[in-house]
Amino acid sequence: MTSRQRVMAALNHREPDRVAVDLGAMRSTGIQAVAYNRLKAYLGQAGGQTRVYDLIQQLAEPEAWALERFGIDAMDVGWDWPGEVWKDWALPDGSIGQVPGWFNLVRPTGPWQITADDGTLIAEMPEGCFYFTQKHWPLERNGITDENLRRLPELMPKVMWAVPSPIWKEGLSDANLDAIARRARHLHETTDRALMIGFGGNLFEWGTFLLGLARFLEDLMLERAKVERLLDRLVEIHLSNLDRLLPRIAGTVDIIQLGDDLGTESGPFFSPQIYREVFRPRHATIINHIKKHSGLKVFLHSCGSIYKLLPDLIEAGFEVVNPVQTSAADMDPVRLKREFGREIAFWGGGCDTQRVLPRGTPQQVYDDVKRRVEILAPGGGFVFTQVHNILAEVPPANVEAMFKALDDLRGR
Image 1 (cartoon, rainbow, N blue to C red):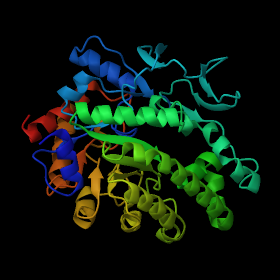
Image 2 (cartoon, rainbow, N blue to C red; image 1 turned 180 degrees about the vertical axis):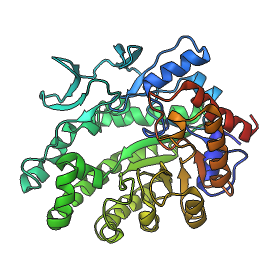
Image 3 (tube, one colour; image 1 turned 60 degrees about the vertical axis):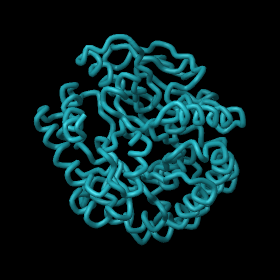
Image 4 (cartoon, one colour; image 1 turned 60 degrees about the horizontal axis):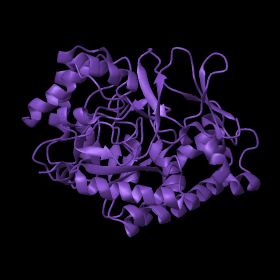
């Protein structure tokens, strides 16, 4: 099987010739630039550049050597974006990475800061931290008003998570969408890896980005009519953007990634009933639109304990779920595979990133990977990646052990 065939077989619940593997095909399956530099040094991998394509989380683009060495089967359409100009930047540990030349970094005093075009401070990297944190919520002061709903497209770029990766630097302009189409076509013809594009399409998360988590949850409980107006406006914007994107990538891209972090460590942010009443119909509208206009697989990134929401997420039309946060409540992989393994594919859950990968021994990492793959892989419906991004503190020997376990299981 080619890598693309391997991934798509798994997503169609057929067992491929060997386990499909991802590293960085979306922005929760990657590796932080500090960890990537340390891994390169540990493996004696000289040369190349550590390019930080996710600026908020400080994620590195995997280079060709990593894709080949670790047998990676999927990739982000936005990697190695043509024409991008990069500049050197000192990472938090003092090692060198590169960021896009247009990236608006300032450091007047204290921590690094990111500002919007009008100077609004939207994010900063606290001292000793390896990623940015949000500092501005556009609707926090005035809430959901008619005027704010009208102005939503101009307010949305002023949140931290709207800071683009290079592929989205020019947004949804016709020129940029045409560039995405050309890049997707080129990759489809020159690589056999499965191609994923990150679209977002967030609903719950956009509420938290705009209002702040506490206020959005309060409004969801006490001002539901207002929240539903905001969500309907978001759906309208997402559908309009999909109308312009989908015709350009249909037939070349394989998977479209949506995101909505619906869970905490102990359970969902809200009851299944609230999801069913408020979010599921709107998720279904977006997914139905995607399926009507393309053959793309619909991928959901949703952190936390979402076991109680999975039946409704499946009903909404999601076909793939990530990160499969097995350390959260009710997210035992044996139970997930038994109850939902025929209805939704698991993209993740392959190695615990909260305890084992950062703090375990290489042997413990090896054993953890082997156990999880033996649970999740049979019968298809599984693409391996660690639960979440490989963070800066992860020892490179543990990253090596994770992929060594995979190589042994895959017979590579």
